[in-house]
Image (cartoon, rainbow over all chains, first blue to last red):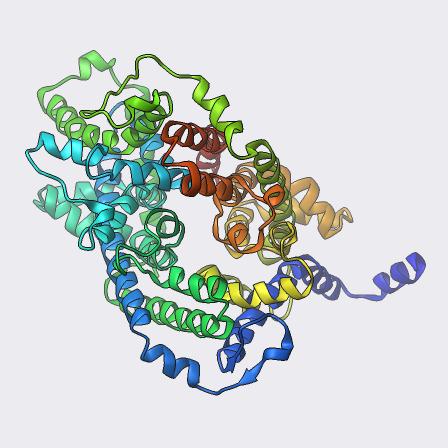
Length: 305
Length: 306
């Protein structure tokens, strides 16, 4: 076997060997792509045209578009979609603005920048059940930290997670706490803007706002675009915080898409209905990403391209 | 174009010189600079408080006596400090040591698996020429922005039919099959390593595997450390997958165990739940602060390229 391989090897050209190496090296990921991504996405599509409640093949039955018809008349589906758009819009818009604001401040080269960068970054990696529990406690209407803080400003805070009106805004507020990753990306973008451009703008008489508007924003627009796309996708995936803190309530005020998908597939074991939901999530997220790429040519400036 | 680059370099050098030869800070204090500092700090500090207070609040609650929890206005430094909350919460209701071992097993496996299954494809995409490479790389980029939830139902069916339901396998195997974001990150880093190095080794008869192992990987420690940290923390915090696959108590992870604590005993022993939440968070913080050194080094390294 060894012999066979080595003689074969010698008869290959360098380019052929390189190509074989390439496919050997990508094979772990390629197997993953087929079995964990491509296969499942196609299977999702197929399953969404069936009626299936179990996981064994016996109960499988082709029903065409019935799942989708049911979806479009499912009130909770529309509620979850609306809530998810509301959450995504709020957390992405506010999150990017806040992250940019902090990044600009941290770019001022005042002493202690490294410590502040750590402080602002840390919450973004501590996401999970532990933090969800802490925030549920912070958002407690009577003795929570947030309403205590607001009382100093003379504001009587709302009931947050216990209120239909305020539960989703509370989750958006909580998402602002974990903007560290996009803040770091934007800060790196800011640090890459050459000082010469600011000097030139100053000579042209630009004030601070003018410099920000005509130098900073265009120069970091690729970084801005990256964080908007990635945080939009991420915000569509909100699950843990809802599952731990609100379970979709009160009422249906925090019923978000992935939580609804989870309930259908893994609590009610409506596998094909869950597949239809998953497939629509795929369509919606792809469409949004495509739209963002389309729109990016209008405002993203790639230097020297 | 060229002159623009040179200009930029010059400017950067001037900037460096300014720092190296600058007067001591007390001679640099000028009114304008002072105002600049004051305004910047006045804006940063309240923000920093918003980011740091939840952690302190969590720790404070974790150290309280049960009857102090609902005291209003809240007390920041509990008196007395109830340190035994940590040991009591850990063992009182649920076997958190078992959960800890499971979480460690899953997270460490994910680190090793991801390093292996992402470094190899990343090297292939950065260095090796092959037909179909561009198409495959497009697939990496496309799956990078794909929400994992899209594939979770068919994956569940697949793993269930393999008999993996209610075992750790659905959490142990996927890290060995690549993760698009990590592949992309490592590839970007590998591209910054001068190709002359592997060309020289190639002429000396080194195989692709030897080049990756002896040249590329030793030069990529910051990027590898970044992947390792993200893989560890991502799996440590993961909630959806263990929630779907694990049912037996001896299989559960810390995230699931902590949520069971919340659901069943959290209202009775809030201080204990908060103490366990602190303990669950500690490994994440340790990994982050140990890894920060690498992050900084990574930034310094990318600054030195070319």
